[in-house]
Length: 208
Image (tube, rainbow, N blue to C red; front, side, top):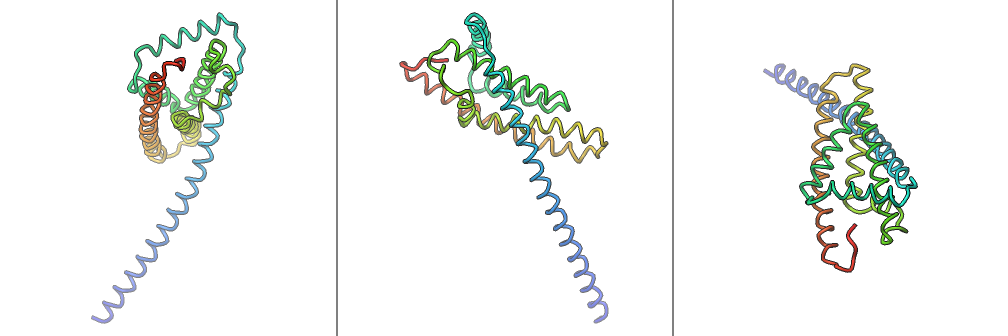
């Protein structure tokens, strides 16, 4: 009986030690992956910001600016927070496509920058406003975060597919990130819509 208890105790300690070691290995790996993931996120966000800044510096004539502003105005006619959310989510989901998603993100950044440039060309209210100021709003930061996360995941998926990594290794993480982006963009859309509504209360402030 004593021998049995001793063996049982030793086995329990052995299992406990192995479990602790496994947890330590998992924690270390997770910590390393999080740090690396944040680095890739930063690269994605910077890529979007560079694309946006490049688009905002494109010079256009008064007529080109008016045409682009008119096209943009047609796209947002009657839009509310749900429309803002759906539009942003559609763009972000496209950015998850392996490889192509990064290109979609860059194109979206340039297009957004060009819209700002057109607005600045035709509206004295924002003609002297630095382009990046718009993205320093709460909803702007959330959108840059979401697009940076999606664009970086797009590039990571290319690597993982080429290396033929186990599908579970990247599918679960991708789905988690999609969920994060949906939540972030929904909150961002609510904040953006509330700010739009607030700006409309000020009749002295021109609506862009």
